[in-house]
Image (tube, rainbow, N blue to C red):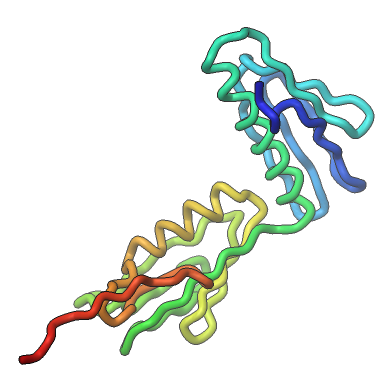
Length: 177
């Protein structure tokens, strides 16, 4: 039994949740999110409360139960308060700036790195701090992880791109005789 799936999901004021077949849409003050859900889980919306139940009693359906509940909670929370992730760029000569809908990086390569920002995400770059904001938690997380993968922090000097609050385990390096 899923502990998360059994819980009722309450819809806050100003948020509208509607279901059209397998598509669930959440409309709030910050925007609209839609997601396609499989028919293994029944989603019932009544009086500002959402309940989820399993149709079949197999392992796959039970594993989707809590996952879908978490997705719906994240959608509701995202349209009320947007999700935000911060990256810190460390290293001599490493730069970042936003030009229109593109992020331009100087990461120590022989060429500049240019990344397109998705439509529903806003990005700001001040000095070496990059802030990614959006209403879709999954998109914000995957976009930020993709940026971090461009230049992961290395363990000797700590140069690279890291999340705010992330601790880099440092290695000692060569010893001189």
